[in-house]
Image (cartoon, rainbow, N blue to C red):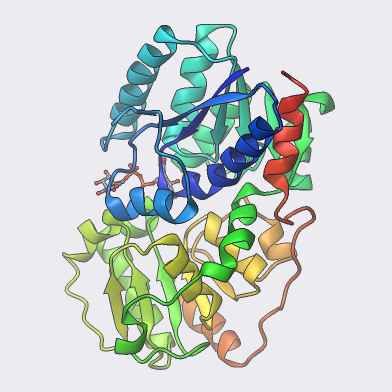
Length: 363
Ligand code: UD1
């Protein structure tokens, strides 16, 4: 069986790493699963892509579509036309797509339209019910043409059942992003600026913002940052900045002695920072899950989440995008009253092995 594994953007890389490792393990046992790793090139900066391959031991992609940046439609079109050529030259039996980025949806559609290529979706079934997010559209479109649904939570299973997906196509396997987190945790290490900034465990905050609704408008981003700085009681705020945010940030003219902006960090350095922080303030999807597993308080600047377990069980609190909501939640943090949280069922580091056991039965 030939499988194409698709990865395109930063949050994909930690999700595919353990799947490739589990396939390689199976190959050594003599199972006939071959794979091609297809990088769409949606993210291409060294610190958004290559550094993840190096630190997570992901093999060099077999194919790079080099689709690059553009509008949603341009990016989707570039990925589809380039991946179609790959499929016409050699067609796999199955493609595996992960998460909810543009590459996920674009490759799923292209493969499905070829006929005779099955689609497996890792992290299927999660929903924010917010159609203003491109990721929600990517999730719904991808799941509407998926053959094998690999899910991370009970809620995802329920969401799929509610759209008529039969149980025999849903495989509740756990979370491959957490496989990577647990495996790599012993290797987390301090970023170079740790000593320079005299950082101390639990005495700084980590901030990440990259959602279009938070960062594309100068006034909105400024209001959020001013509120965070005001509420932070002078603690250093480490802000590894996504390239999208950097574009708006330059126009803000915000300076504060405790706001430390840096380039996007590597996986091992970023998670070291998170693990030792007092709290993370974010609008990311995956970081809500990682903080839950690391038992670090997470304040999410979004109105909804496709990962509700991180709030109901974990350490996450959704506060919306109104800057007024920041001060009260930070007061709660400083009062030491944050929930400790539990880890969702099956986020145990073995999701990729379970996925490959399912694939083995298809060979
Ligand atoms: C994408 C995902 C989002 C994910 C995020 C993580 C979609 C719809 N969104 O958003 O779900 O949380 O990745 O990072 O797929 N850029 C660079 N260098 C790069 C990559 C991007 O400079 O290596 C800049 C480009 O100007 C680009 C912009 O960032 O236009 C946005 O990149 P894009 O891939 O369109 O979406 P993200 O905002 O990164």
